[in-house]
Image 1 (cartoon, rainbow, N blue to C red):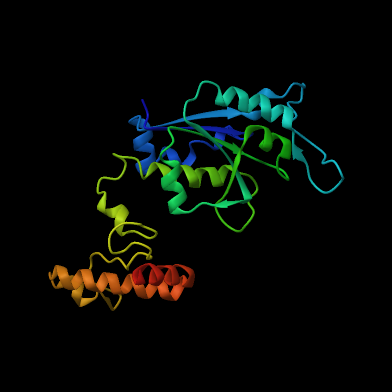
Image 2: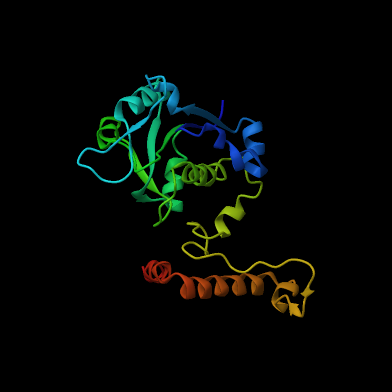
Length: 240
């Protein structure tokens, strides 16, 4: 049985697994570490044109996805799933942070609704208790790309996907170890000199303590320069 399963509702099922079928995520999918089920919302429409949207009440531009069609699709998608959680990818949702991703990984089943057009009927979200999630302060053409981002962020935290657990601690937005709350330090590999640019001498020294100190200072520098919000939070935690 997969450690975590995702059910996607979309009008473009051919977009999945997409990039999730490659690299670490693709290998983990093939090994059964995580599972994927994709439902075409149009299959639940009742007219010959498989219509899933209509004009908004009150006027306005664009179209809105119908509550009755989505309800039929969601009812089928959610049937018999224990510990399931329903997410709707939306620019007005709560931000997807690393902390939020770690919370999502505790659920065995995630159902993700990918909206299109101007969005979905609000009554549908209320009736199913959908949680709106945003991957950033911008608007996409639909929820599919956002869903791919969310799923990838979850998959890489599952046991057996990434070979070195320490790599998860020392990357950006980690919450364990001395790098917690900081952006990741700079990375270098061979050759030691490239186009006149040299790798910092400390990384070639073999002195692990000096390397550790250098990486920590670089992580602090980059965080302070690029993310004032994270830097202020980091300083506040260090004071306590």
